[in-house]
Length: 304
Image (tube, rainbow, N blue to C red; front, side, top):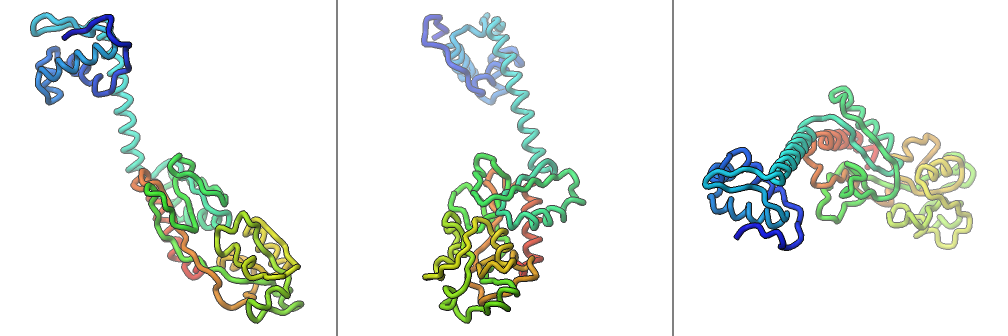
């Protein structure tokens, strides 16, 4: 069966089809093309016929064992060479990305972690000067599959099967007040005393994290409330004598004016570095992830 000019509408060839044209052009014969591709001559002939029918044009003119390319065949070979070059360049770029510690690593994390992520990145700056850290502080969850970030620092383990989580540290939370507030108003002896105090609580939109809704769960009929939508703002309000509130221990540690209003850790979660499985072996991502793990391990008492 050969090419018929009044067959179905032409379709775009696949890369495997274009390989046939490259092999025929370079080998100069069907037998040579078969040897280059590791298939027999009949397979080459069958795939060539299928390609001609799919594009709706005769690509070679046969003359015994020899053949010549038609104008359409030469155009197809030129296109195939361009595709081959593009694939080779893409493969080279992927190999470089896998091996070279260079370029930009984009990290997404809750705002409270931003200075710590910068500190961790600074530890690798001298060793890998071509590695650039780009850190975005946000409470929202970025889509790693869409490339919105290379690494996400999260306070929960992801459930998506294509995401890989690496534990960085436990993170403890406590109830805090300023020294000035404690001097003026005293401190609660138990959670039952909290409704008698001025309290700092978090906006309902943040209540998916148990630590951020803890005060709302224990405030009962308290009337003196200040509601905020940011942990750093909460720390400033509490430190400015605005009331009693919940903070991660590592956030409270930055404020010398704060004391524990209740002695116990009221909640604890795990901090993870999360990457998409397609990026886990990329050198720049791996080096950054290792730096984060080392930093959190060195500061475990601060966070836990």
